[in-house]
Image (cartoon, rainbow, N blue to C red; front, side):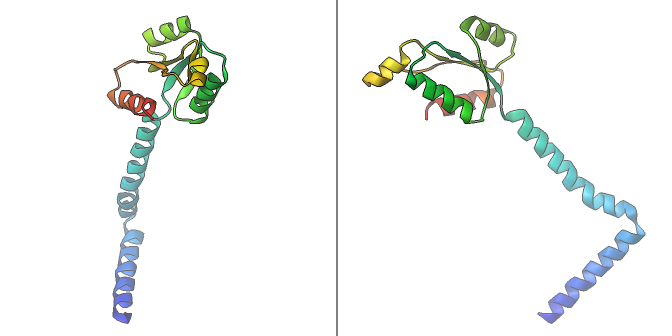
Length: 138
């Protein structure tokens, strides 16, 4: 145990001496992890929180719960718009998807009848498209 500690301390002191004599070594040791952190941060920012248009055509309690769940999930940047604005946003690539809560949604949920949300996805980003597909099946 003591010999391991002595060897570790010797290596530490040798490396510290090299660092102090050659500042380029400090940069060579620290820059690669910093660049990796920057690349990871940019990747996380570019993939997360894509803009999604939300069209709500029903004012019932089930629709309100769905809207609240989408907004509280903090996965997408939700823009609540009407159907015409949603189409314009989708065509101009202002959003990557349009989620529509149809009329009669709350009544159907209340009656236990099958119902669904309409989801239109622009397929330009396959990763995001797969995220939407996975989130709507849950």
